[in-house]
Amino acid sequence: MEPAEKAAREILALIAATYRPTHEYVAADARRFGHLDMRFYERTTRLLGSNGFRTLADIEDRTITNSPNGVLMPVLVRTMLSRDGTVLAGLYHPRISRILLRVLLWLFRKLPGKVIDMETEFSDGSFVVTSNATSAAAIDLPATLISAEFLAASVTALAVFHRHAARVAAHLIARPGVTARAVSTLDELVASQNRMNAIKAAYRGEIGAVTKAELERLSMFGTSVAGDVHAAVMREQLKRAG
Image (cartoon, rainbow, N blue to C red; front, top):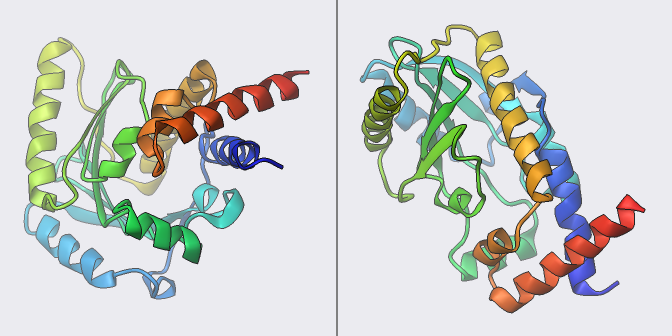
């Protein structure tokens, strides 16, 4: 099999497994995640806790963990809520599982860092997301439903929160009558996450899994390789459609 065809099949399998309308979230024991930087979790938990956040639960997204090709090691996500419950903070440390891929990503300065995500859902079904996961900016989102901004990886948790609060305020001004939804339980958090997952999955279906522009932004080796892979993705999809 040609490298582009092999990459195309892996990409389509990964998207099919990852962009599902419903993900399986399970309670997680932090002691089982020794491969992650737990000092990051504890330090950031204390910082946000001193600014009105409370820890809700440690969880694992098994849908992501069990995605094909073993791209990521199991990831602990520590979820925290703002004082009024309208801001969900997710702290996590993604680590690539395959040694060769880790080396390549390190060489090209694309290793994922330690992430602070802030999310707010609104009564009209829209979301505002603010994050320091810079690499995630390569993947498009339906902007009318998910307004996302990705800050530098070096930005602190409090800086992410303050920027998120400003963006939430602007979102509410632009949508008269819309209110921010509050979350208070893990079940409510999971339901909110899966509403966002459903939006993302539907959007992937609309654009045909992945665009050439996304592959170019993700590619470590230039736009020509991304073009070959995208063409292979299109051929594979036509083949599967019969």
